[in-house]
Image (cartoon, rainbow, N blue to C red):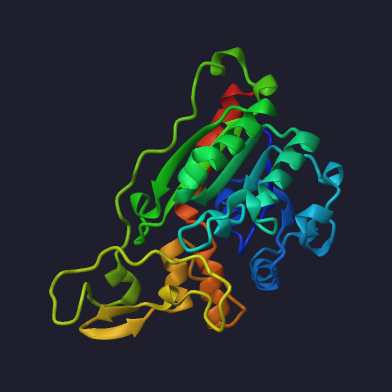
Length: 302
């Protein structure tokens, strides 16, 4: 019988990584999330006992004693992407509040040396600062003795009706790999057809504009919140034309666009819910990549 893989969920948001990997029979042993609305949502949906322990459901990642994190196999993290995103100011590592949080990932990897990492960020990360930011990330992880593979994947390539291009990065700890793997690269999953369209989500025909018959199958990408009030990014509230009427998207419809189940709870205001969804990960994509990470760990690790 193969052992149950354990993971930690850094910069966890509302729990997209947790949901996806738990569905693959993996166990979360530590979570870090500083936003109080995200924490409230996470707690409402995951009833794991460790969440009652403040050292295991941490807030500020910089205040964590990394050596005391329980042993785990995979470090997961959709590390804050505002400094790298088109919607953000593109400050990258110069943004001390968010950009440098990548180096918290480095410190955890140094302290715990897990078998793998699984990271997500905005597509723009690859080109930020003429590619220098991405080069620093790549070299940092390589210097820690990890392999490094990446791919830009759209949520719409894995059944969800929004484009949401994101860069996914996967690596394995080289000293724990079998010799046969050393010359291989990680293979990302193949695309899958669109499972549902925006018409399915709204329960009516969604068209590109009023008085048009051209269907909008794929919706606007839910955006990262930008810190403005009361609605952090109004593009999350763009109207859709449904049965020739302009309708605003609801958090419940946003959850469906992200691959969350209908029973997922959002115990926050609609404004906060849309901000949290803009910062979340596409569950379908994370699950597909996660299943291949699991396969590699079970077959290519010592």
